[in-house]
Length: 118
Image (spheres, one colour):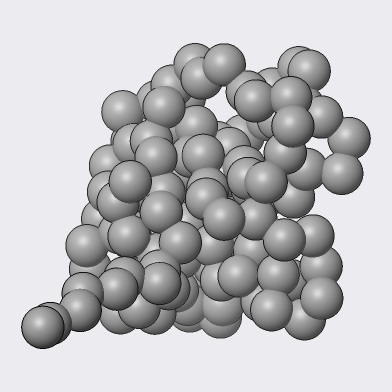
């Protein structure tokens, strides 16, 4: 008998999701948080690079890229006793934001180790 368990946190990419009222999820949003976000929901913003890479070790991403840095912050907060979540809803607002999320989910080694596509 073989087991296949994937304990990574699933990430769904949705441009205009119906946010569940109950919680249990974290939100990764491009540029601004949506209205109606339930209180206590772990949430973090990222800003598209707008075609230019940030300088190494910039304040927003410390050389990682905005999306991997944001996801790392969510994961670290959860691991250190912050609000628990079992999935992430990623909300891009632009094609560039969507591309950044997809790139992080496939190319950033720490993101791939912690998160998986839903």
